[in-house]
Amino acid sequence: MKIPNFVLASASPARKKLLETVGIKPIICASDFDESQINITAPQELVNTLAQCKAQTVVSQFPSCLIMGCDSVLSFDGKIYGKPENAEDAINRWKFMQGNFGDLYTGHCLIDNTSNHEISQVIKCQVTRVYFGKMSDRAISAYINTGEPLKCAGAFALEGFGSLFIEKIEGCHSNVIGLSLPLFRQMLAELGYEVTDFW
Image (cartoon, rainbow, N blue to C red):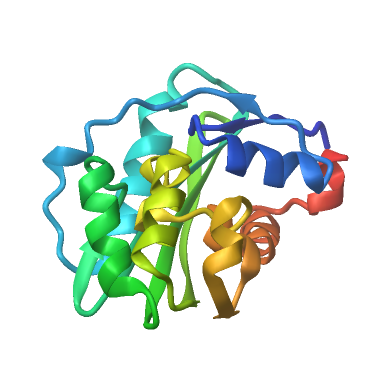
């Protein structure tokens, strides 16, 4: 079986690095899908829909490839949070997140358009509970001033400065970074591949 090229429909450096860490060198193609057109309030349905839309947006550019789309949100106190709008928004979020916990949802859509032009896809969601440490206003401001939280769903990055302020997680570690590697392995298997095929 010829192993197809793997396309990541995301500009996320964290997702790219996760894949490279496990021996997969993805072709990067940001989908630039307009997320504002999707109005869904259930976090799992939202991230799965967005992941699917992002993957489908770039499929036509990559015949005979595997395409992965992902999307993450933080569900906190019954509300859904993506990337903060600005520094003030990020500061306000951290003021009520600190000392509490939220659930990080990542939707994954893997499309295989290699077989006889019939597109096959697998869509799955992973959820990880994240516990935020207690922080002073000074520490919150310093963290926001790094710029890191402005690029991330939930206003934190587990793989960066944000790791200092996360007390613990329950569930998949890589999911919080943007792509659940165990789930990814399972999705490949459903489409008939071993993750080791891509080494």
